[in-house]
Image 1: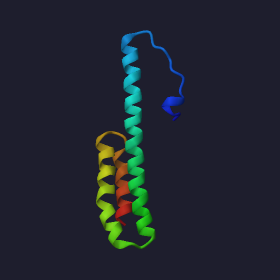
Image 2 (image 1 turned 180 degrees about the horizontal axis):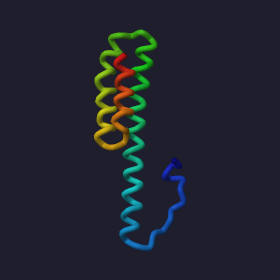
Image 3 (image 1 turned 60 degrees about the horizontal axis):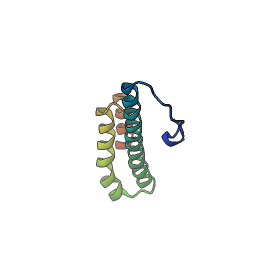
Image 4 (image 1 turned 90 degrees about the horizontal axis):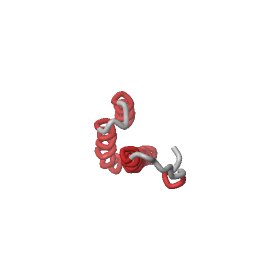
Amino acid sequence: MADVRKQKKRIERKISAQKRARQNVKRHLRNKTLVLGMRKAVKKLRAALTAKNKKEAETLLKPALSTIAKMVTQGMLHRNTAARYQSRLHR
């Protein structure tokens, strides 16, 4: 997806369309930060696992799994995809 700031601003005629455009921008930014947060948590955990740092991996596991679960409840990840991620991290 293109960055919101780089997109040309389209002037909507109807008030409802203007509101919808504002909501879309807000939701896009919120979804983007949540996805990046999940990816960052998983990346840190995988880095700890490859470094064979067991103690750090144990502390990072629970937050990573909870962020993946939050993504499912918010409808940003399919539940089977989240289950696959969680299963692989547990292994």
